[in-house]
Image (cartoon, rainbow, N blue to C red; front, top):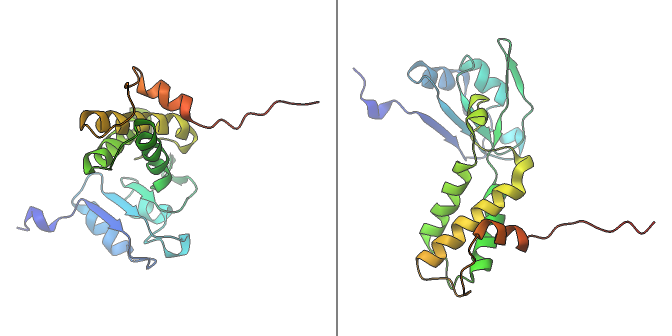
Length: 187
């Protein structure tokens, strides 16, 4: 009997070498996981460890897939799967805003964890049902505001925030600090 330690549940590709998650590898991880997690994160697309279509097909539609490059939705067995895109654009803008709006005197590991937790909280059950591991990028401003609020809250909690007093509603404050590219029509 194989040890549980030798049965991975997640494949994370960051090697920059394309097609390393072969059909044999994806079928193997799928054989002992109901929902194998496959993150083919290498860029550009040509260097992705596998494509979304390969991950969904070889796992018989059971993979939870995210990539570093965008992939189009995939139809498999009459169902549409929407690949997630693991991108630092989810974390860094909100993280930076949280640091600036709190006036944090230094960055602590717990602030990064707070940013990750805020991102995870933005994923809805509807997103999960579609196989998404990240919320839709179309909501990035809302996502960034929540991340900024969590990061700032952690900075205040850790005594690292220099901006006083602490705003009562950190999400609203984050939104008010964001640049909005809205211009008057002069005609």
